Image 1: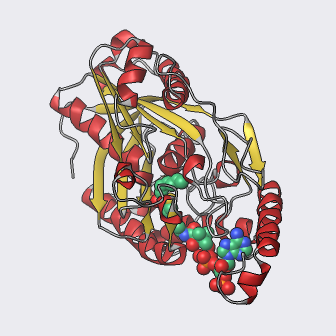
Image 2: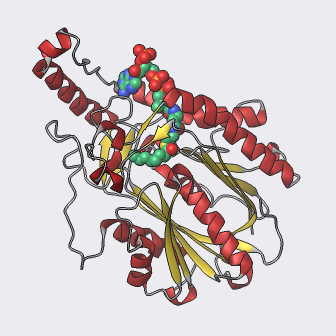
Amino acid sequence: MTTNLSPRIVISGSGIWTPSNIITNDELVESYNAYAEKFNSVHASDIAEGKIKEKPLSSARFIEKTSGIKARYVYAKEGILEIDRMRPKFPERKEEELSIQAEIGVFAARKAMAAASKTAADIDAVIVAGAYTQRAYPAIAIEIQNELGIVGFGFDMLVACSAATFGLHRAYDSLKSGSAKCVLAINPELNTPQVNFCDRDSHFIFGDVATAVIMERSETCTSSNSYEILSTKALTKFSNNIRTNFGHLSYVTDVDPFGWDKFFHQSGRIVFKEVSPMAARHIGEHLTSLGLKPGDIKRFWLHQANINMNNMVVKQLFGEEVDEKTIPTILDTYANTASAGSIIAFHLYNNDLKKGDIGVICSFGAGYSVGSLVLRKR
Ligand code: CO8
C-alpha cells in the first residue's frame, strides 16, 4: 500500500467513448431463445438419447432481476443477434490502419485530455489497461501514443476487471517516483468478442466501451475538477472461478482455439459469494489505514458486474443499506464493461462532489483481484 507522501498526485480529467449500438435484454433473449430452440430441434434425437444437453431458454426478467442489467452498448450489433452466427462481426483492418482498440482508446483519451486541459506535449506516459488486447505487440498503448503524438513511453497490461484501477496504481507510482510527469491511462474494453452468446449463463453480462483518465502532479494541474489521490491499495488471490483459456498456445496444443473454455466462463454464484466479502474487507481496511470510516465517504464508484453484489459490498461495509446516490450504478445501460465500469461510474457521477469530499474507486473480479483508490476533491 502507498500513502500520501509528497509529491501530491491528482486525477485531473476523465473521458469516455460509448458505442452507438445498443442491445436490450429483450432483443438479446429473443435471438438467444430462437437459437436455442433451433439447436434443440436439430439435435432432438441426441437430446432424447441423453447424448447432448438441451439448451435452456433465457429470460429478460431473470437478467434484470439477478444483475441489474437492462441493455448494453456494443461495438458491432451485426452478427450478435443472428442465430446462425451468434458473435459480433467486425471488419478486418490492414496493418497500416489504426487498430480498432487503439481507435476507441483515442476517442476516450481525447475527451480526458480536454477535461484536464492537456495536450500531447504535456503527457509522457500511456498505459492501456484492460481485460483483453487484440494482439500481443506492438502494444496498443504505443499505437495510441503514436496516434496522439506523445513523446515518452507506453505499455499494455491485463488484470481483467481490475485492470483500470491497477493501471491507475501504476500511473500513481510513476508520478510519485518521478519516472513520469503526466500519465494517460486508457481502458479500451472490447468484451463482446470474448462472450459466448450461445451460453445462457453468460450471454447477457458484457458490453463494450472505452474510458480514459489523466493523472499528474498537483503543481501542473489546471483542471477545475480534480481529485487528489490519498492512497492506493491492491490485492490478488488466485482463483479459477472466472477464466478464459483463449491464447496463443492453442495453435500448438491441437485443441479448438474457439472451444467453450476459450471464452469467458465463470461460476457466477461462487464468485458472488467469495468476491463480495473480499471487496468489502479490502475497502474497509483501506479506509481504516487512512483513519477513515465508511460514513466519511461521499461516493463509492464500484466495479459494475452486478447491482446486488454492489449492494452486498456496501451493506457489509456499513452494516446497512445506503442510498443509491452513494453507490451510483451504470449497469442498467452499460452492463458489465470489465475494468471500465468503476471509471464510467466515476466519470458520470463526480461533478456534484464538493471540495474536501472523499470518494473511493474500487474494482473487483477475475484473478481474483481487488484494486482501490481513495480520492479527495480539490
Ligand atoms: N435466463 C434464465 N435463467 C438463467 C439464466 C438466464 N439467462 N442464466 C442462468 N439461469 C438460471 C441458472 O441456470 C440457475 O438455474 P437452476 O437454479 O435451475 O440451476 C438459476 O438461473 C440461477 O442461476 P445462478 O445461480 O447462476 O444465478 P445468480 O443469481 O447467481 O446470477 C450472475 C448469475 C448474474 C452471473 C451472478 O452470479 C453474478 O453476477 N455473479 C458475480 C459474477 C461476477 O461479478 N463476475 C465477475 C465477472 S467480470 C470479470 O471478472 C472480468 C472478466 C473479464 C471480462 C470478460 C469479457 C468477456
